[in-house]
Length: 307
Image (cartoon, rainbow, N blue to C red):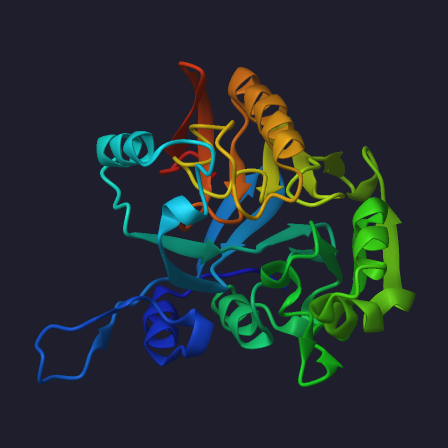
């Protein structure tokens, strides 16, 4: 089974998407229907002998980004940084990007997006059906990562086993969280629990990245001397979080620990020149990290990971 990307399918699928999968709607004239901007939903990369596919399972705009990012800086500082990076302070575009990894006979999905429809559409563009997924790895239990686990009360990935951090699972199991109880708890008997340094499959290693949630984990991929880090929600924005790792983020449950994890792991990526995929980075969500001043610079991938 191969993982393929059909760009014509990308255009057709994007035009037909609904709900959370919609791209921003732009009106070209007040008396005409609003048109949707098409966007591809799959982009493939090579990491040694591994096939890695970034999957766009949804994208939505959010108003008032300073109410989400940079909670501990002034409006003036937030505005100046945003202006210097050519981004608006009125709106942020959120991307939800699970990753698919094929290693040997394993087809491993990391996170599942907002809902089953979104992840199904992205997988379809990559030439994969949900029943072909052998493993589902959950980096953490926020709703935009577990939303696609169930489809009308049934598991979306009927043939998969599930893996997640032990600390993360234990936290949400006693939290009374509706999303966890509906989407994750029914899969408990098929769940394997991981700790720092544990292996998902050959060449895929769990890495503690606590703070965003109590047991949030990243995953290092390594094959034939090549590496890539799936950093999940370590940094939620390429400027307001990655470039300024000490800026507080609304969604980080332990803000001090999240900043500490960002500095440690982003520093490692910069020093070792390891590429990464960030769940909320602008699609296709892959890039490099460079040390800059007291923070980091995000360098989007172009053609570096195509062979």
